[in-house]
Length: 169
Image 1: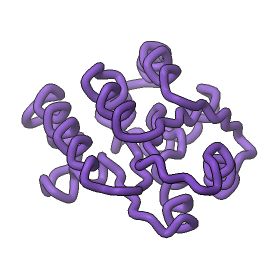
Image 2: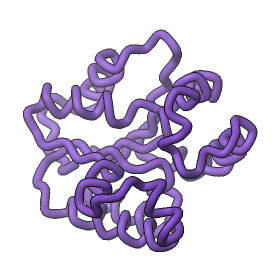
Image 3: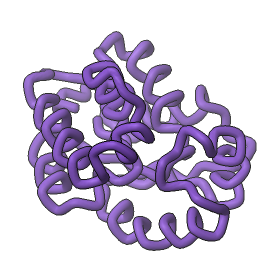
């Protein structure tokens, strides 16, 4: 299963819980990139640029093809590139975690320094609006609100799929 959505939507936290419940690997593309490169995404943007990062991110995504079954949290921009969308659609089920922007804004305010594309609340809203059409082409959408806990999201994600889920990621 591939988790799609804007930064702060809960892909990492909910994905970890779901992978534990299913006893399958969990991959967060952003964390994998930072671990492999030894740099934060922000540092990579500053030293090599976004295009460099997006190429490496796509390579990491393609590396998930070797996992028979896993939960993969995509970076906020990963699903906005057609080649990545095609890959995800060919290799698993995608689920868009869709909290309203005010929920995202509250979460992002806490970690704004870690987000290279978060300049201001206004710029984050514009980026969210630009990315939503891409996110909406995910196979499924899960509405998330302020009261929804990561455990609730993981439980709802599990219910989206048949109990005998064998559809790859």
